[in-house]
Length: 401
Image (cartoon, rainbow, N blue to C red; front, side, top):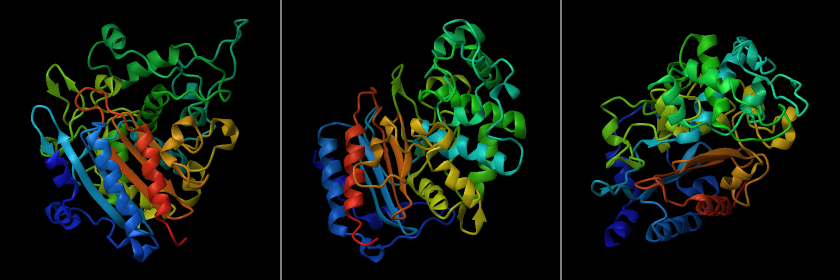
C-alpha cells in the first residue's frame, strides 16, 4: 500500500521529464490559467487512490485539458501485477477497446464522406451485397439499413458474435471480408432506425467499407489521414515490437498477459485490425485528437475534418434522434454515464471495455481522458461509477466559463 501511495504522489514534472521526445503535444498550464481550480482537481488524487485501495483496477492515467492546454496529468498505481508489479507511467500505451470506434472508424468514414467517396445515406448492401434486411413477423423483408444506421448503432445488428464459433467455421485468422459476410447474413433484431442496439458488428462492417472504398484497411487509412498528420506517433493498431514494452497489459490468458495484443476476441480473430477495437494509444495522443475536435477539425495547422463534419459527428443524429447517438460518439444513451452529472447536453464521448474513456465538452472547451487497466489480470475491475465521479470533479473545477 505504501508503494501505491508513493506512486500516486510522484510530482508531475517527473513524468514530463521521462517522456520521450515526440511530435508536438498540447502545452501544459496551471488550472488557474484557464479558469479552473487546482484544489478541486487535486481531490482527484484522493478519489483514485481510494479506488486503488478497493482494488477496482491496478492503475490509471488521467489527463484533463481545457482551452488547448493540459492542466492535469497523473499516473496512478501499477501498469501490471502479473507476472510482476510494474509502476504506471503517464506515457504508456493502452488498448483503447471501443474508443477505437469513434477515433479511428467513424473519423475515417467521415473523411471519405468529405472526399465524396460515399454518403451516409448509402445502403449497406451497396458495399456488402450479403447484408440482409430485417424480416417482419409475417416474413416480409423490411427497409435496407444505411451507413448512418451502422454509425449510430441502429442497424438492427446483434451486439456481438462468438469469435470461437466464427473461427471454427472460417479459420484463424479470419479475414475481415469473410467475417463481414458472416455478420451480414445474421438475423437482424429490429428494423433499421427503430432501436438502439450497441453492436461491435456495426463497426466491423464499417471498417470493411473503408477498405473497399479506399483500398486500405482501417489501420493504414486512419494512420495516413488522421494519426500521422496530427503527430499521434504512439497511436496504431498492432503496436510494432519497439512499442510493445510500453503497452499496458490487459487480461491474463493461458498464464500470460496480453501486451500489445488486442483484448477484443473478434478484433484478435482478424489479426488485430478491426473497426470495433484494436487501436492502441496514449493519453497525450488522445489529447491531441480531442483538441482537434474542439478546434472544429484542425490542430497544429493540419485540418483533418471540416467544421461541419465535426458538428454532424458530435450532435445527436436527427434521423435516429431517440437513439441518443452521434456519428461514432455517444451523447445521451445509457452508456453516457462517463459524462457525469454536470457537463452539458452538447458534450460527447465514448468508453472502452478495457477501462478506457474519453469525454469532451465543447461548451467549456474541456476534455477528460481516463485510461485504466481494469481488465488486468482477471477482468474483474470496476470503473463505471468512478468515471462519472471523475467527470463531476473536473466539471466542478471549472470556475470561469
